[in-house]
Length: 84
Image (cartoon, rainbow, N blue to C red):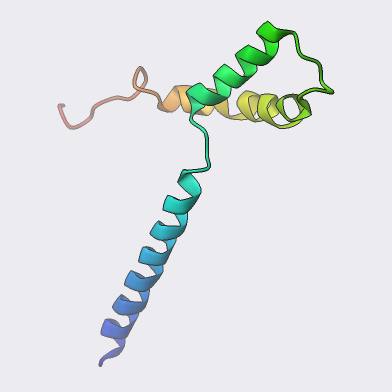
């Protein structure tokens, strides 16, 4: 076997492994809608920090950091360059 073939097989094996790992992780990651619903229910129910500290400590800072990026990548802002 030549070195290019070995490199190709190793790369293919690594990519398959990464795909399986990310597929397994994906099942535990909530959708943006689920995260926003969790925050909304926190606000509507009038819960306190002591009841759900993860929303204040983790969820809200994460939303503040990443929502601008998600919105810039959303369907309203994607430019279809293939049709041009």
